[in-house]
Length: 294
Image (cartoon, rainbow, N blue to C red; front, side):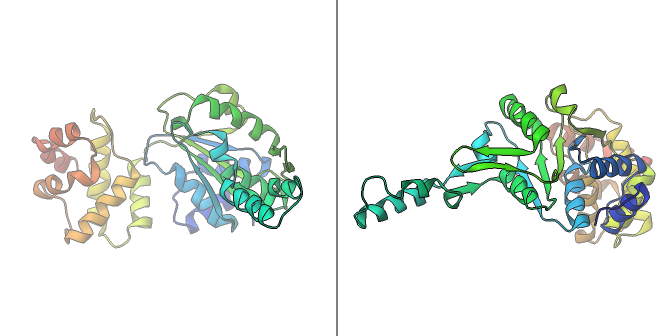
C-alpha cells in the first residue's frame, strides 16, 4: 500500500529501519504520487541503494535491480533471445522432418526470450503491478545506454519487433542512483525528481546507529558518530559513509570492544578506510586526534 502523506512515508521508512529526513520523505512521496522516477545522487555508502530496498519492502513488491557497469548495452539490460533453446527447437523440428520453415515462427515467440531487468519491470507493470526498479550506479554505464533510458523513462514501453509492444499500465517505481563519478545528462535528470543524499549530521548518525546497531552502548555510539564526523572533515581520498559506520560498529562488537582507544582505532582502520594513503595518514598519529574528537 502506497503511503498517502509525507508523514506516512517517513514513518514507513522508520518501520523498515531507515532513518529518513523530511526532505527525502517529501521527494519519495512526490515520486510515488506523480509516477516519476527518483534520481538519487551522493557519495558511496550514504544509503541511496537502501532507499530502493526499503521502497520494495514498504510497497510489498519485489525489487528488480539493474547494476550498471562500463560496457553495459541494451540487450543485457532489456532482453536477449535464448539462442541455445532456439537451436534445440530447430533441431527437434528437423528430427521430426518438419517441412520448409514450418514452426520457425514459434521460436521467435516470448517463450524463447530472456527478460532482463528493464523488460521484467515493464512486463510486470503491464499486468497492473507496480514493481520497484533500481537502476544502480548509472554513472558507471556509458552515455549510449543513458540515451536509451531517455525513451524508456518517457514512455515506459518496450517494442519487441518479433513479439509485440509491451506498455506499462502504471509506471513502475523507478529509483536511479549515481555516485557522480561522471555527470548525468540534463535530459535524463529532467525526467526525474532529484535528491542529493549527503553524509548525515551527528544527530542523524546517532539515530542510525540506534536503529541499525542497537546492541552497542550509547557511549560507544557517541564515540563512533563523533569519530566519523571528524574523519569526514579531513582531506581524505575517500571519506567513509554510513555503511562504514555500521561496519565499524559491527567489527567492534565482534572484537568485544566497548569504547574507542588509539590501539583499537589503528587495528580497525581497514573497516572504515579503503585506501592505503588514508589509512597511513590516520595511523601516523591521527588516531589520537580522532579519539580527542570523540
